[in-house]
Length: 261
Image (cartoon, rainbow, N blue to C red; front, side, top):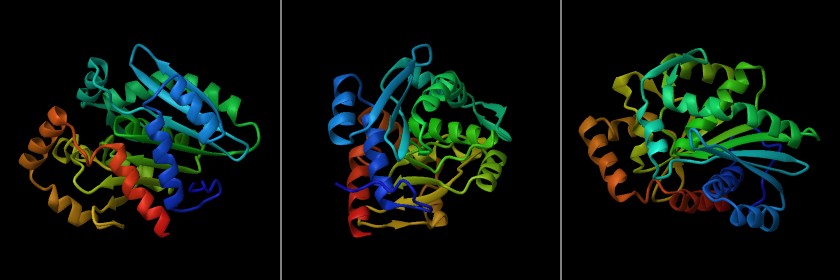
């Protein structure tokens, strides 16, 4: 098994792969989480949720590290209502997606108390999530940073945009360990669209279908430059699903990268 690097500084392919597995596990509950936490990862865990906003997160920890993974979108009315609340709220040195921010705020108290319980040995803290879970992970990280707390790393997968250019500017100025991983062909990262005032934050890693990655943000932006293409591809994803957006495909590409590094 690929080993996590709890003291890593800078982008770690090994950590990206491990965090992708934990982000995938956040979609599970009950026996599956308990079994994988104990037998696969050999870590203590807590799985918490806010029922009102249908927001879940998984905390796993050992003597070296504590990982927080936020669950992404499931096919529920509450999740899609959160996604659809794309108007802005003023927060975190800019403007952020109202639905994502509301969801993040709903679990902040439980998360703080859970971290107090897990972080007793000076462990490094890592945040992660896929899709909506990635958006929540970024907003929670931004909140921590605003309070003077800097996690060891933030890795998101297929994350939509969460705020405007001012949010992105201040986040990038204050925090240097945010890694936004995007599969080639994953349209979810194009929403909410740029023309509504949204911008991405964090360091961009474009996972190519042929293997490896690119950080050419201009080439990626050019590919998705047409609003019509974004809308068509997103509607197809919403109706039929998308292999490129799924965590299985993220894990496959990340495993190749980690094994090659």
